[in-house]
Amino acid sequence: MTLVAGLEYASVLVFALTGALVASRQQLDLVGFVFVAALTAVGGGTLRDLLLGAGPVFWIARPEFIMIAAAAAIMVFFTAHLLESRYRALLWLDACALAVAVPSGVGVALGHGHGPIVVLIMGISTGTFGGLMRDVVCNEVPLLLKQGELYLTAAFCGAGAALIAMAVGWPVSSALLVCAGITFCLRAGSLAFGWQLPVYKSRPPKA
Image (cartoon, rainbow, N blue to C red; front, side, top):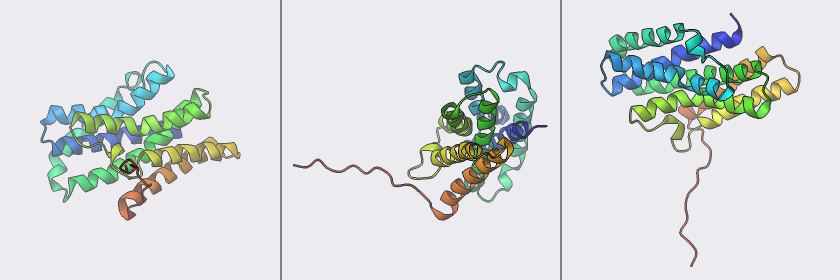
């Protein structure tokens, strides 16, 4: 198994777990769990493949991705009540998912021969859109839009770091690991230490 394929599998599994945790917060039934988990798990990758014109979409070519998402949903359905804080678990699992999905998107775009701008956008899209779909469908405030938190910024910096690493001669595999590490560190720092960027604050118009 290649590194990119391994990242894809890890991304699907961990994002599915986050989707199932959100489903538990919404008190959905088992079918709802599977739907939200699968949507979260493959949403970002589906958008990526559609934009890249890479057919068939990855989970259609390999339906085992849906089976992985379904299995994760069923496991969470029966075990979520054991967690002390499902929201806290959701945040950290989502950080892990972001850290594997972004380099997965970068690797897939590179494999299709695209340049830096497209690679950057595909990395960000793969990492963020599954979680965005999850939160919108479940009527939760999207983690992507939490005020000041490093989420989209973490994905951007991780994908950008991969491009810089390759530009200075690092092999693709090492660049993808750098991408994963930086993405996770920034997101984890935001969760653990409150790292954030300045946010826009409106001011009353001058007289």
